[in-house]
Image (cartoon, rainbow, N blue to C red; front, side, top):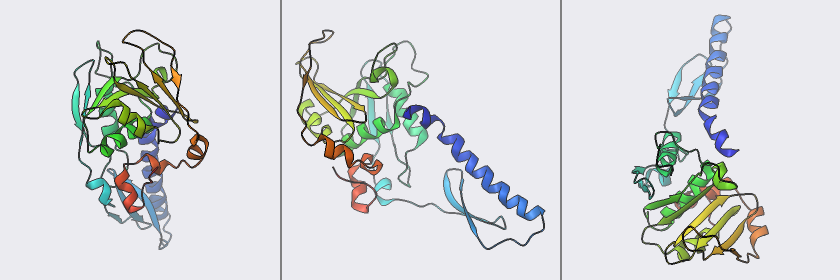
Length: 251
């Protein structure tokens, strides 16, 4: 599961630093003349270069689109939890701590919000992309991971949400442009929010059920699905402002 892989990022990054450092120490202890080469490493989350003689020249590699992004306001309707989240660091990479903060706010279990319900990181990115598209609209979480739920709400790959000031029909129309995503719209006057999930083959539907009632959903045709899904690249999950720098892609 992508969400599980997300938890291993810190371990992998830490390992790259340790092994890089070990190579330098081994060269020094053997008395061999250091070769004029550079080793890519990370120091405190900062990209750096380490020479084979052990000299480190840490340097931030900033992305203009990332540094210009405002914070996102995220609120959970069920618990009232809320906060401001800066999902990307200055290099344009997903910030682990910020992603976990988003997940904790999105946790919909009333009895315990101290531990975040882990969500697929790509799902978090897609919600953020939509919020930025609609001029940094505040995100209102309706439902995230549900304990004991079947399907993608049970695996942390789905989120029900709304954007304040944006009609559900307009939001759903935008989300249906995402590749490899499931998009549902709840159209009853007392619901008015969207479902978004990550999957290999896109699927779109409409549900007019009133609250706490399940009616049969109606599939929405998607003739461009195969071509859009086949063209998917991870850069497409970034905010649209990244496309102006060549880092991201527009749908």
